[in-house]
Image (cartoon, rainbow, N blue to C red; front, side, top):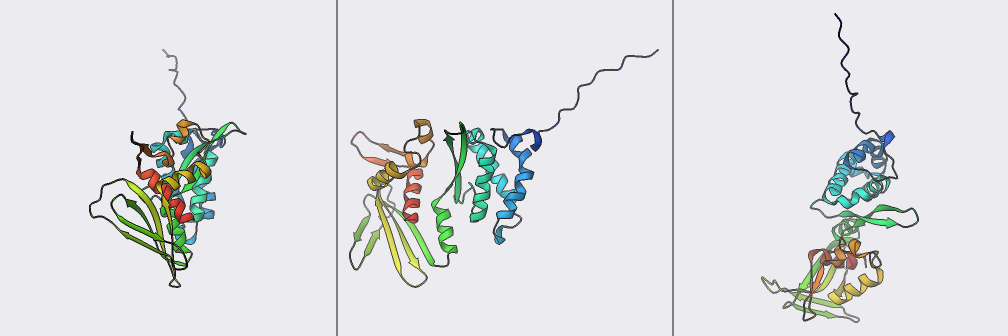
Amino acid sequence: MSTAPVATKPPVKPPTAAIVAWDKPTDKAGLEALAPAALKQVERGLPRFLLGQGDRMIRCMLTECAKSPALYDCTPISLFSCVIQAGQLGLTIGGPQGEAYMLPFGNTKKGTKEATLVIGYKGFIQLAHRSGQVRRMTPISVKQGDVFEVRRGLKQDLIHVPLRGNTNRVTDYYVAVELQNGGSDFETFTVEEAIDFRDKYSTTRNAPPYVQSKSPWYDLTTSKEGIIHTGLGFDAMALKTLIRK
């Protein structure tokens, strides 16, 4: 006596790079499927001291996507391009180092969202040190109650005496630079000057409110008395701008 064969479901195949589009948003599994093909391009652009670190850099990108799900709305090719760009610069995306990170932006021409690599101020310091011209670069936030004096002219000078244990609001920023040739320089911002710079030049100045809310440039509040209190994100963007200057 024979029995009819029992019907079985075909095994579910994991996603492969062949069925995941580079120009269409996908999830973590889709990005992992594309990773082997992207890894070759990442490795080609790495500086000598980062050779063999391509897989780790891609993992850093995937971790950032998990932390900021809005990045999954971006095209995979833009996400992996951020990894390639960061690798070429010798910087790490995300993590405690804060050298570089990714932000989603809409591409109105293509009707898609694309990830853009943004270099953090610590990343700019790394690049400055590698140039061989900078001995030390020190970014500092000044708080209300600190002694802070700036002198301009033929003999420039900057004096900052922090008040010990000061927890007051931030009022100013500066970056002091010591050069290998023995020279020095500095750049300064008040909080108001940093806001003015943001409103004139920031890539998010004309973005919708939901995009601005995710930008560190808008990490600040204003009290009923009109006093501005900055957050760590705004402080970092102000210092990064001074470093670039």
